[in-house]
Amino acid sequence: MDVVTSLTQRLEDALDRGSFEEVGACEPKGEGDRLCALLTIYDLWMEPIDRVADRVRFQNHPAIAEVKNRLEQPFIESLDELSAWAPATPTDLCADLRRIARGTDDSIYEWVATSADWDQLIDFLTIEGGPDALFDDLVALCQVGIRGLPKVTLGANYWDEMGQGDPAKVHTVLHEHLVDAVDLRAIPREELPVPALRRNALNGLLATNRWLQPEMVGALGLLELQAGPRCRQVVRGLRRLGAPSGAFPFYEEHAHVDPLHGKAWLDDAVRPLVEAHPGWAARIKRGALWRAAVNDRFFVHVHRSLGERSLDVA
Image (tube, rainbow, N blue to C red; front, top):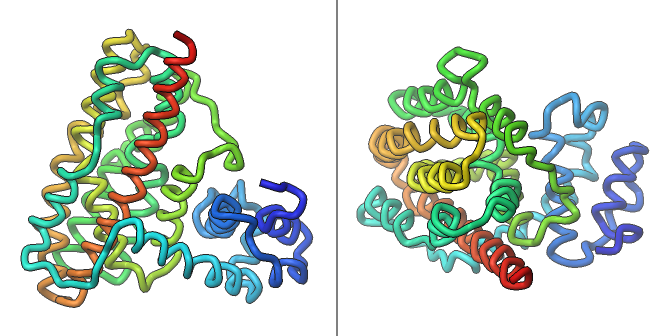
């Protein structure tokens, strides 16, 4: 990416200056630039306030809103294309979501559990980011305006993310302990491959567009259905390679609670939501398919990259 003329760099400069004249007419230099620019905008909604600092005042600036909308339209179209989604109402949505969860390619997790060396495991954990970065904030936003049993169900999920009131057990804190225990490094956004950027941008798209709330319910529900088995595989890999004790609590916690979360998400959130809002069914499935599509491409890319590095070393 050309850091001088890229839309992302111009957007960064505009946010620093508070002047957006050069941003409106600037087109992204490719998919990576488009996704990085979107993620820069999503930071205004999702980044910790101490990191985004004074930039947050531009969150709803007309120029930012115009760029956001202009970039999101092709992103949404690409998600529909990647996921081969068609607007048909499912006959049994919960069964469909379970089939989508089972149908994804999780071979990279089997490889992590049985074959990856230590450096490969660390590289994988660095880019995977846990069941999902900032999942607590995503669940909090997902339940806005929802009532009854679905609200209580998502609220219980959020309370688990908050360590059930124990600050030391908050899931983001457990992830920080993992980072310290195995010395995970932060990868600069501009160094991430497009499949990783796309995966990250999907969260921002859903979190900053309330009209996509049904898709968010589907995407987060799929994550809950899949995270438990995946985390168990990571725990196997950590044990096999003799990881320090501080590396285990984050993945062990998710391996234990996420299967319960996934079942509750379907039975006590998705099902009653669709009963109350039948039009949500197709869109909840759409969000799950989006999530499955971006994850599959991300994991295939990472698995190939890490495997090729191993072959190069050999």
